[in-house]
Length: 77
Image 1 (cartoon, helix red, strand yellow):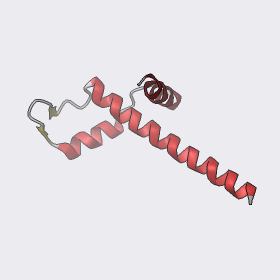
Image 2: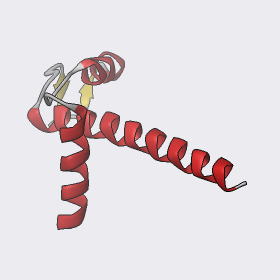
Image 3: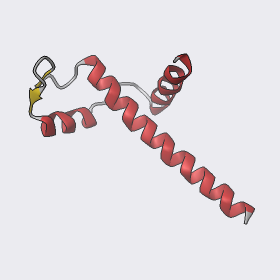
């Protein structure tokens, strides 16, 4: 039983880590102003193409940097 709980815990942590990497990459791409087909002032633009563009961007050299910046930003707040 303990082994099953340990395995489930590891799987949950990996899944959450991948979500953090994806969301931090997206957040940083927005912050850098990548995918400029979006008008921030009026909030208009093609949101589906912007979303696809932001999801395809690679903003840092390693996924570990995404985890580091996401966690360090959380600690600072």
